[in-house]
Length: 247
Picture 1 (cartoon, one colour):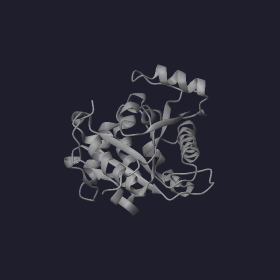
Picture 2 (spheres, rainbow, N blue to C red):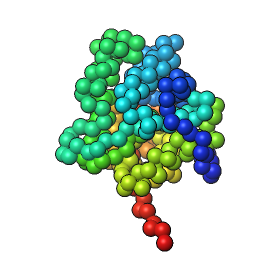
Picture 3 (cartoon, helix red, strand yellow):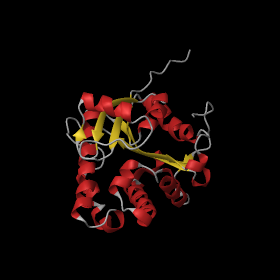
Picture 4 (cartoon, rainbow, N blue to C red):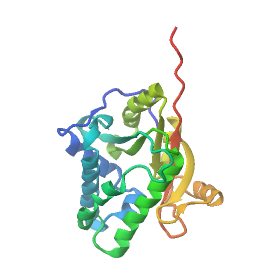
């Protein structure tokens, strides 16, 4: 349930709180279907999850000012700003940035060809969905939002989202995200996001019929999959809200 009160205690991410942030994200995504599909399994999964978020933040180090953290690392949000790439067919992380993950593959997914293929196929699927949705427009990309399950339902998601959404509205800037769980869709819809596409982590873009079926099947229970057995992601956009001029 969403809190009706916007909390104001989110702070900027720094070297001093990044470790707690990584731990909170690992807690928040321990049951995430996409993470479980890609990363190492069993008792190696928690370590692999922490490693993944530490690597993501290393890619984010050029502009941590966009990232927010709850006190004591109870949750965190990781954003990117994309200035628009015209008619480019790709968006988000560049191929060069994606190669940054390759040396760390053993601690993330292992060295099996199947695991590596899943990782790079997912990156390609998401990258192209991102580009299709944003169509070269400047936007803020909510790469990751997570709240430690122990602290969910206390308005932390609102605290982590509200400042950046307010900034986007003031600038007239689009916002973009991918949701890996169907039951998170109403939460993002509450903040003005709309589903524009559904993709499978392996199959890619689903047809409208497949997407409608997945929405019915994925009402927050179980893991919804594409025709190849890979989990789905819901691509969501948020148009900026018009600012009412002050008298």
